[in-house]
Image (tube, rainbow over all chains, first blue to last red; front, side, top):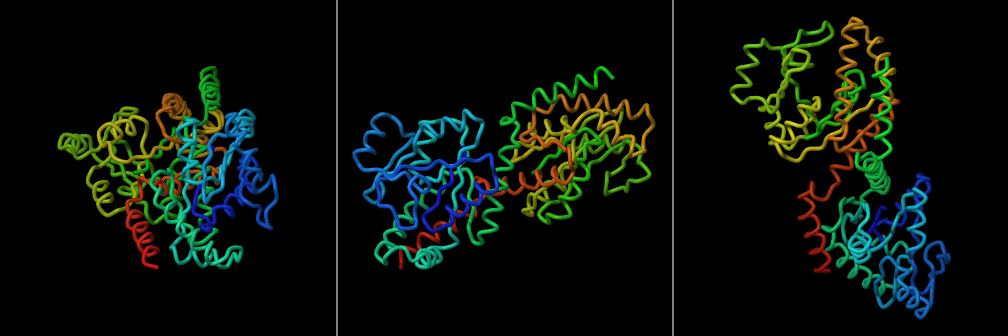
Length: 204
Length: 204
């Protein structure tokens, strides 16, 4: 399970999309939200857009791995797809904020790797949000305040990637994924591989 | 500090050389040995070749980070160059066996990452040693017996790379190095970077 967090505008979504396109072992966890859909968003792909009562039902039935209220809207991670992916031997990618990451670590307690994407500077983050041209100046300033709060939690992540250049940042995230899969304690299949190798040489 | 281990013939030396050529942050730790120099080897580059009495003096003066006797010869890792590299902010690459890796972990206790390179099979290892054409059949069989003993310690390493294809294996080792450098706890400089970023946004 890979958790990717960053303030909005730091490039997290692009990096997540690239990772899903180039690495078939990953499935994306699609969050549930009560916030309004933006014109560029597709229900079930960017988010599952739900009403507040529907969200509350999911939450109360313990169908969410984590949930939080941000900017007056609810966000949550559905439990069923994550459990299915793990059962299928797939890796699951979570595009969530620090509150979600923290809850996941506490409640799920499974094998989880977390990466925080930092922007090169707050000024650059403001420029990127302006270029995206989806939000009013007021909303952008709210996002920047929120970005500061998010960045303040950078020390809770395993890895830090500074997104100065998107290609470099993506390459770094790929390297983290490759390396984490090579960790000895994550490769139970190697036990048989090595046993067979040692037996093979014993009979020669 | 990066420890790279493998049975001889599994490709460790080639991978180490590629890493040193492509990554200027690495310095190689050159081991001291009392074994006979092979015709292809250069003193001070592949090993520091020393007499048994000279080796014993180094060992008794605590000038070695670790040492061991293998195949009737002494091998050791000199302390001074490693301490200088760490002091200079360089990364140090150690091309040593499991006994050395274990001693380093116990005695040095510093920030150390270990990678074990596995051959795809013992038969393939035998073929590689034969192709190298440096050793007699008898020596090759001794090396293979030793390889089995070395492989039996694979579980003591942080990462396992199977060298089926040299390019793939090198790419995997590079990914491990890249990822380990991105670990939050290995990036003390980020603290100032983030503090500055948060201050910058506060004054806007």
